Length: 338
Image 1 (cartoon, rainbow, N blue to C red):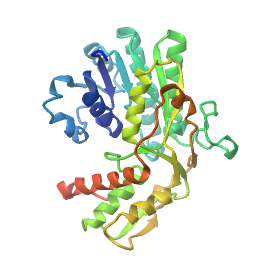
Image 2 (cartoon, rainbow, N blue to C red; image 1 turned 90 degrees about the vertical axis):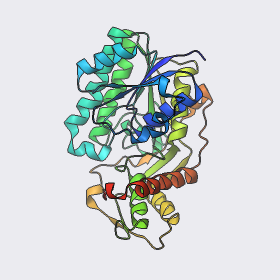
Image 3 (tube, rainbow, N blue to C red; image 1 turned 45 degrees about the vertical axis):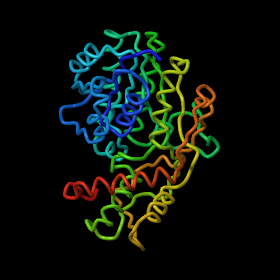
């Protein structure tokens, strides 16, 4: 596989950091990572400190809300492949900050694609949408395929619907080489603590470390999710752009294991060193509307790429909990309950 220059927006996040790590380990590609001046680099410690990668990894400052910085980013990186992962990605937060969410996700994606159209029109561009665009799906449409109508259930989901449509528009209107993914729930090490399963794992690790009382705060435990591991997700993204990419297409990607949020909580509790940890519903953690039947039909993507998830639910949850245990062990004073 020939050397390429790629750009990852959102490289400091869970998915972006795992994707950068996967590419640096498995190719000879050069990786440009878009970061903001205040972006923490903790998730990238595995590759920043690796001497084998330092000549193929470069960070560039940019903000999706600043067109000048996006233009500079594209001109400086001249990417052949773009993984556009950066977003305001927290559904619960979007209820408090909908306008920021719309600006970052919809207009930010437009700014990036417009800059690429001007300065790098031949780039292959992976536009990362979300399964949240489907929102509240009636039971007769489960499992959800790519033709299911959008019914977003949060400002975040609305913003991702816009992102999705913008990606397709730039293909249809300007013949840009866009590919759109609607990834269902994916988690694992480095998952942000604003997401349910990571919040549970973090709280359990804090209880084990004696940093909080033996009670986990939870939201809606009845919502149904299909779980994939982030390390399988980034392999899927890599295959998306390298296996006969079909520009303008949209793909569902997701795991094989479906369960409720309550099932995830119970499994994480079963892994704990502390017996009989209780839980309590925090009304502040319950969304006004929830997308509660998130079960995908991923046949289209699997038929095209032969991708299959390899890491099972139990391993993902074990690794997630161990991640938080390690983070808290290294710096216990940095953690608060959220």
